Each structure stands twice: as structure tokens, then as C-alpha cells.
Image (tube, rainbow, N blue to C red):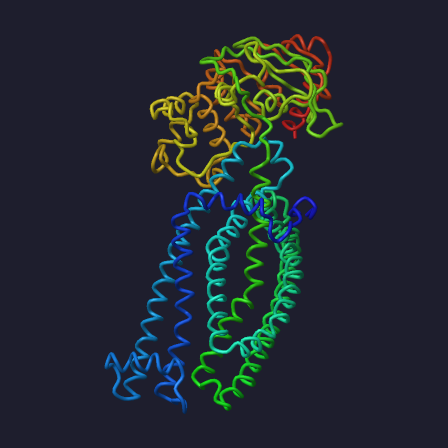
Length: 618
């Protein structure tokens, strides 16, 4: 697999103000919920300042009272005495323990409320973002999908959006809680003992250096993991969709070996990231242990000299642990932010992609289309410098059936793609009823045209929904009529639930002929003025083809039809046959006229029917 094709864009800086502002745009509709969640997490963080104070109170008031009263002794002791809550040390410890439990219970309820609000908000933001991504994918031209693998686009709508959800539900809000806790703890630590506070902060430079090292290395490994997961998605999508071909050609072993390669690359990238985590967190534990040791050493001396009480030393140790934890988690927060910035950059790159092929501001939107088509001096190339059509001109009268034949790669299917404006011509123009298709409203243009391809795509859903394709104007009665006209009604009525029978992904369980007949019924139900059959009968056996030929005559009647075919037996009834050769119009005329001319068509006809005679003789 070509890694360059599946490679993810390089990650930008950790924080991009413009990008972050765009991300916050998805938060704006939910500002009340976000503000409530921020308020709850700040309150929860401040409540976490209370338990260490209660621990100090229990120790200094009842477990091990100091020789001389401290401010806390006098404050809490006087309050408990005035309230007549405790008449003995055991009773006092019990009261404080009860208060401890109450504070923890209230904090837990607040955390639950905050988490619930943020998760609901995060799910709504993901819903909005995925809707925008999918909507943009509907608007982008086919050329965009030619150069972007499906696995990458699936990653945009799934993994990347999930990374942004983590930012809103974990990283973004928890930063406010961490800041509130850090500021509150710093205030308490300096209030208890400012020299001890300075000692406890001595390890901060080491923590910051570790975090900077981890951020730098984790960034590279994270990009590698993202690249590999996009490669896995693309490989899986390609080989699952092409499973029939894989098994048909006995390529299972090669497919497994190929998947092993991309899977192994993903494992190696993850192991590299895990290695940095495995170094970082033990190092952080070691540094924080050093900080706690400094607190015990210096604070123990203050307890011995009577400057600090034993209860306050225990509380101090609890505060310092709570202070170090958000700092130790800082790199995780940076990682979440980095992930979100990278995901946001890729998502907004997709959302900012200009559709290119759109309806003009003053689009031509006729109520009906007659179906006259003109190709005028058309040049077109999928890849610059490699033209597919050259100076191609053709006039098709309304209601005329034109067959297009030629060698593979001559540009036959390209005519259909250009008519439908999946691509725009490089030179010249294409007109319908005298109006350049680039002036048409896209929906009006494509509503006037139906196309039946060789490879029929059926969506998961009912047979009726696959014929209707979401068009509310097509009634159940018209669906049944179209199925009857195309000779597929008897087959559908034999299904367990008739038209409501569910179709599996890509029509699994249906024969090629059955899927093709459903595609014909889909086209007839839409009642288009212009019909394109692109190798539509190539996958149907001769018996089935003869059975539906009469139905096809009904489908083609009174419609402008463009029949693209390799099998010349299917085009002999066309009003005109157009022969393409190397992107140019080589010949045109009726079947008999072209045979008598002795040109390319006659050679194609002789080669094809000679091959059929050999096959029959064999």
C-alpha cells in the first residue's frame, strides 16, 4: 500500500488560536451547559480543599492536640464547643468524620452532574460536527474522492471527531477545575507556612522539564499512530469491499500479509508512544516523591520546633499531593489539546474544501427538460496532460437514442460524467436544451437525468427505498408500476416482505441480474427526460437480457437516451451509433451504415462476433 497516498497532514502547533476559536464555534449553541459545567467543576475543585483541613482539625483537636493552641484550634474548638457538638475526643472525631463524608458525597454529586452535562453536550457537538462533515462530503465533487482514500475520510468523521469530543468533555473543562484547585491549594499552602510552600515548589522546574520532553516526543509518536490508523482504515475498507475479487483470485494470503504489514506498523507506532508514557509517569512519580520527602524533612523540623502542628503537616502532605497531580497530568492535557488541534485542522481542511462544481447564483432551473444535448468542441482530462476527450462534438436530438461504442479507455463513460457535471470540461461546453449545463441548477440537471451503471449499488434498507432513493414524489403505486414494467415485480412479490424486504449491504444475497433489474425500475420510477445506460446489460446473461429487452424498449421510449456499451448486439436498434477512438469522434451512423463504411465499427463488430462464434464452437 502506498503510504504517501494515505499519509495524514503534518500536525500544526500545539495551540492555534484561530483554530481553537473555530472549535469553540461548535460550543456556542451550548454555552449555558458549558458555563454550568465549568461552574460545577470549579465548585468541586474548591470542595477538595476541605478534606485536608478536616484531617488537620481531627488530629490537632482530638487525636494529638498541640501544646499550645493554634488559630485552627481556637476557631474549630470554639465552634464545636459553642455548638455543644462534642463532649469527648471520640465524639469530636466522629463529627469531623461525618463532615468529611458529607463533603465527599456533595463533591461526588457535583462531579456526576458536571460529567453528565459535559457528556451530553459533547455528544451534541459530535452530532453537529459529523452532520457538517457528512454534509460537506455530499457537496464535494467526484474529483475529490478520486484523490482521497475512503479510509481517510471515514477517519475524519469518526476518530477525528471523537478526539474533539475528548477536548470538550475532558480537556477543556478540566483545565478550569485544575486551575481553580492549583490556585486554591497555593493560597492554603502559603497561609499555613510560606517557607514550606517554597520548599514544596522546588521540584516544579523538574516537572516542567519532564513535561516538555514528553510533549516533544509524544507529538511525533502520536502523528505516526494517526498515520497508521488511517492506513488500517483504508486497507480494511478496500479489501472488505473487494472481498469477492480477493477470494475469486485466491489472494487471501497476500491480503493477510498486507494487513499484517499495516497492522504491524500500527503496533510499532503504538509501542513507541507507550515507551514514552512508560518513562514519563514513573519519572513524575519519582520527582513528586522527592517533593513529598522535602516536605516531610522541612515540615517535620517545624513540627519538632513547634512552629507547625502535626495535623497541619499531614494536611500539608495531602495538599502537596493534590497540587502535584494536575501538574503531572499536564502533558495528558497538552496531548488532548494536541490531538484536538490536529483533528480540528484536518476536519476544517475538509470543511473548507471548495466544492468547485456548484449551481451558479442565477442558476437555470426549468420545470421540464426536453432532452436535446450538445457536446461542443469538448476537451477533458482527469490528469493534466493526459486528455481523455479531444475536440469532441455531438448533437443529440430530444427523444433520440444514441449508442456510444469504442475501445476501453476511449472516453465513453466520461461523456456521462461530464453531462451530469461530476466533472467540468476543460474546453468547449455541454448544453441541454440549448443551455450550458454549467448554468443549470445542479439538482434540476441531475433530476432530469437517470443513469444505470454496470455495477449497481444498492443501499442497506428496503427494496422500496432503493427504488425511490429518498424522492418523496415517487409513490408506492409508481414503484410497483415501475417494477412491473421492468419485469421485476414477480420476483419482489415472492420475497418475504415484498417491497419492504430489507436489502443487505451492497445488495448481498441478490443476483447480479436481480440488482440490475431493480436499477432499471429505479430509473423508470424517476421518469427522467434523459437516460444513460452505462454498460447496464454487460453483467446480465443473454437469457435475462432477452427477457428485459422489451422492458428496455419501454424505458427508452420518448426519452433522450445515451447507451454506452461494449456488446454491440445491444446497440443495433439505436437511432445512431457513435464510435469513439482515442477521445475523438471517429464515426457515426446507423448499424448498417457503419458496417458498410468498413471503418472502426466494422472491425469491432467482426472481432466481437468472431469471438462469440469461437466461444459457441468451443
